[in-house]
Image (cartoon, rainbow, N blue to C red; front, side):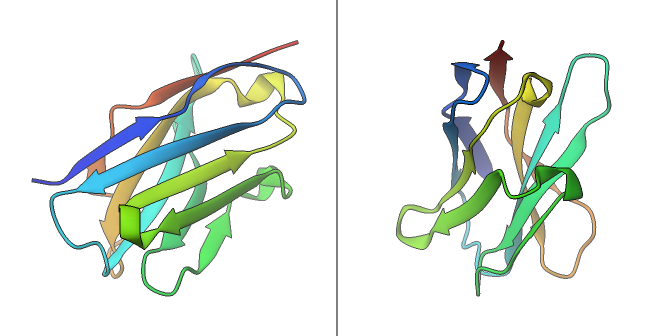
Length: 119
């Protein structure tokens, strides 16, 4: 049973930083891609960033413009999303997800963690 548990969300002022964590369990994730998505109120869920568990290759949504960094700690089975220079429009529920390398669809999702950026 795959479980993804996010943490680290909260309230932060614009310009501040947060680091989200996603602890993964239930299997070996060496053949997986781990992703972060977000969903703001009234909007569709959108892709934020992803990382290949093996090799560590990363890719990001264009709108990130270098503000966010995804990383993973294999020893802790944890994926991180470092978010800097936060803006009000970054307010959303952030979700961790996992998919096999060769698949396009993410099969496993966490429960989400709320990030609220105030002005």
